[in-house]
Length: 334
Image 1: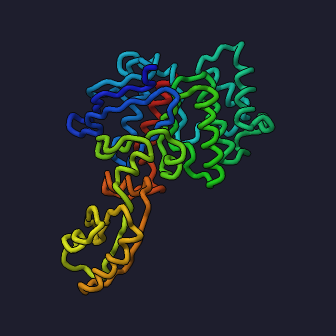
Image 2: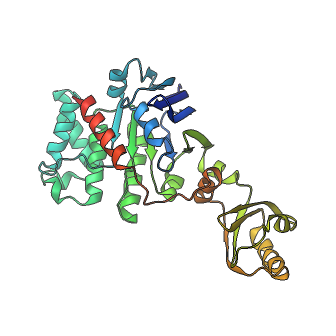
Image 3: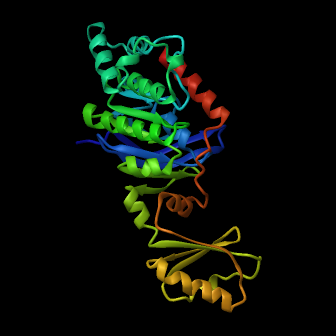
């Protein structure tokens, strides 16, 4: 079975000198839920925009469902669904009317429109509110409606941009179930961006982390966490002083030491056992610690390891990103 998405040495350069995406290569398998993570300015939005034909690549190639995004963008758009972080549902229309509009925009045959709408409303648990104006919907109901609109034309690949942003934990969990249903019931390949690392951990089959225009890590959530090599012990001295890395690195059981912003991250395959020794070593050498924390491998730690930055859940796309994306999509949809 060929991959649903193939990306080879993809590049995008702005104004002839700003390389937003630099030689990105990866594949997404059919019926896979694939997570794409990266901080602002990492090249995430640019990459997704190229895959959805909103931007033309400068170099390299990308295929969606076997179709080249640069040479045949119209055919690619027929094969994909796209749900933006920004709401695209019309508040002044009912849920059913929004789906009728989406069906018309995607050229769904009239003979199939009613049955598809009925099935999707049932799948998304929206049948009872199909005749209500969308402005009366909760955030979760609105997102489910937009998911339905995104797959009404039975796309091969569904691109979801922050589908649960702003929802409460219960709403996020519910949307996660519907995303799995898209894959399991409709056979859709899902390409997902999210700022909730716990969501990516629980939902995605594989994850790619992009930073500064390049793929820094790629694999299943467990594979990425295993690459950390053990537990992470973080210590923060109360006062700035000489580098403690050589001292800490000599402690038996410490696999590696890195220093960032006045704190030390120590890797160990037996974090609980080694923590008292680390604290005692610092005490004996006159170092007072402000804090000590031990974490099991998590995607938060994976992200910090490969990008050098914390992953902020409140960090969304810039206003420029939003405007560019929405205007391009509206232009391509005409």
